[in-house]
Length: 600
Image (cartoon, rainbow, N blue to C red; front, side, top):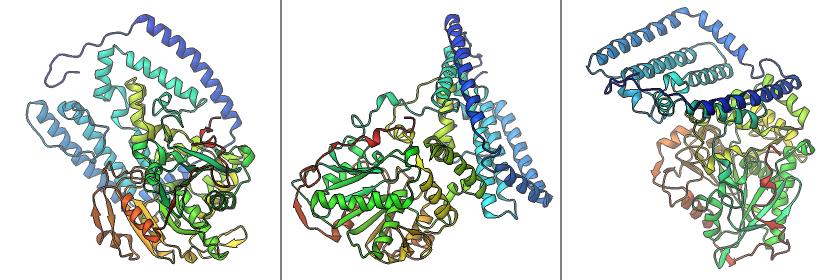
């Protein structure tokens, strides 16, 4: 195909015959093995043919749509009017004229970053045709009236999944960058991409497990998760790490962090320059972190109350033994924050006042509006999930990872399809994506309780809605000072849902909203100054009203938290060295639990 500035058709060479022969022989041998493995796994899986319960949702949408044909006809007329304008504009461009775009992709959409998508009138037509079709499909779905909210959300979500999958950027013959690479390499990129595809199928044992980064470049404890410290306590569910001080004196109250066990803790300690753990140590905190076990079938009966007892409460006992201090500051991240709030409500009943301040990173405690994760929470899907967990004793880590990746399919799925399989390139070494791929399993009992009682029934925010360790949980009994940080573009814990926590806790609350998403908005060190944050001393019931009155401040929210937490107690003591208290050091940080992979 000729570029408008170059009338010559690109010359497509042929790949080396010997290379092609070797590659195709390898493809045949590996393909036979992969297919055999896949068929064996399918025979063992008795799941329903529609495990996500999509079919029923789309049938209901179709029925509702047919009940109002005028609305559909109106949408079609609008679509064809835009399409005719695009045809006219493209014809004008092909004759040497200029014409404005009928539609542009949303800001931040990187699928069409190659210049040819605009400079070449043919590819510009393909791009705009796709965008018009995408807008048509999504607007028709979103405009269908009469569906219940859950069904409408599911139909909208999976329509967008389909639309994203059909992007012309995902196909060889409609992606100018791929065509150019194919011409330059004589098709070697496609052969290499086929090899990459087979390798990913082998990694997934018949299921596609896309490699997002060059994982050979990273090793936990060597170039990520390297902040010095010692494991000073462990039980079935966690290792407790105490980090070595870098200041001569430290705050009297130790700081303990409870990350989510959906992921591994070292998201807070990826590299020295963006490590929240290292930064907190440098500010003078004695930092402890719970490194959760990657559970197998032997821990299938561990429940949410076990994570309270063997997680938060066990950590508090261990910290007192290690430092002699009963009073601590605590941080919970995502599910770890939900656990922290739940435990604080339990401790309030027991008159246990050891946690003096609570900080919640992107934490939901009211799940009424749980965002797009709610698409995966209905009775049919939960029954299927429980059936699979019942066989294994746990939720496979890859299932959870796939769910989260679908929330950002263009960035976390299709961009790698293009890079790895169409362009035939190796993924770039990126520590965050290495962490993202280092998935964890979930104990069957705990995960079923979490999904049913919190996500599905939303019982946690109800006074006495759930009972743990024999105690009715009421979040309104939490009186400790609370600091809530949420992120504006969070797809996992939407900030307007996390804001509801400000109306639940009885103690003083500070709410801060950071820019960016679930990870980048939290892991945003002051030195980088990449993302801003919003503050507002008032806490109205409406999150929109809070934001309308908020002030945007440049840079990281970390210093704001430091001022807040140290404002609660500024007492200092000599620095504490891990292993010198009543708890001996068991091993060096980051410990052995974090090294266990879901594939082990």
